Image (tube, rainbow, N blue to C red; front, side):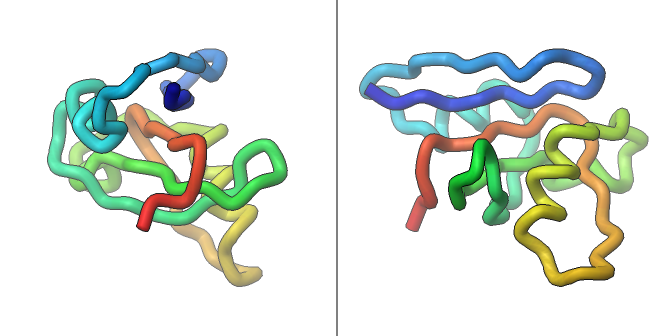
Length: 94
C-alpha cells in the first residue's frame, strides 16, 4: 500500500491510496507535465514532493500548502513558491 497526497491550489489536501502502482507514474498522471522533485516537510516528516516542471513559468496558480511544505525544509530566506498541482509521497524517494 502506498499513499500519496495531492496538493491543489485553493483546495484541501487529498490523500489517495495508489496500492502497488509506481508512485512516480501516479504523480505524473495527476500533474500532467514533466516533473521536478524536491524534499519537503509534510506532517512533520521529511518526504519527496513532485511538482510540474513548468509551474513557475506557465502561470499556474500559487499553491500555498505546497509552498509551506517546501519552505519548511529550505534554508532561511528562501523565497521560491510552488504553483499548480503537487504530489507528496509517503516517504523520501531515492
